[in-house]
Image (cartoon, rainbow, N blue to C red; front, side, top):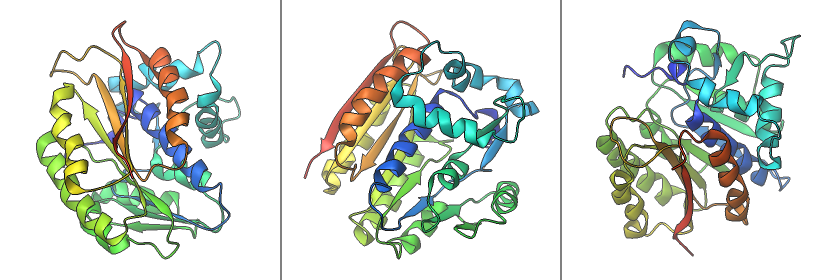
Length: 283
């Protein structure tokens, strides 16, 4: 793979994805029993927005930086914003120089008794993860294909948890098929687990077949949330992104109904920005 998330760290898709991830983790923390966070495509774990890769694209300017300059940050985004500040606590001037990837977000959010399993296939990113979490006994780093590893990681010994599937989507149709295969196997082993699958949207019709697959597969209690920051009219740019959540926690749809309009208002790239929240399957 040639994909490097450092070029895209802190963009609108990261804000969307990580705000929802924090909400899922908070929902799991509502019960005292331990749980496990599993990341199939962990990346490097943290990204310095001053590095050449981030500055070359500047995608964080229309992403996380919009939240930093917002006149009134909505309550729905307060947990996400507070975690960003925690990730940058070492900066004496309070600057947002570090953008936390999902592994770092999980480590800052989970409790002492919870556990983290990170999969990453690229050697440089795996080395970065091992260095970042060298002193955190909750975290296990696996240099292997996350799809292949997933069936062996579920069900976790805690019997509760969330799996984040956030691949690079270098080939969109092929990626969806790979997700379906891995998810079908994992769901057969652990039908009560929470699975959060992020995907990009250029044209919305390109993702409809994937969304219909959940009903055909018989996967119940599946919620979809989408954010379009631009018009759904060009295959040449990233116009939005979505997340399918299997076994969404109780009342999580009501929480998303508050979050999505706030994200659309703060991150819109055109007046035709929109958001969508829908149950693909029920009980």
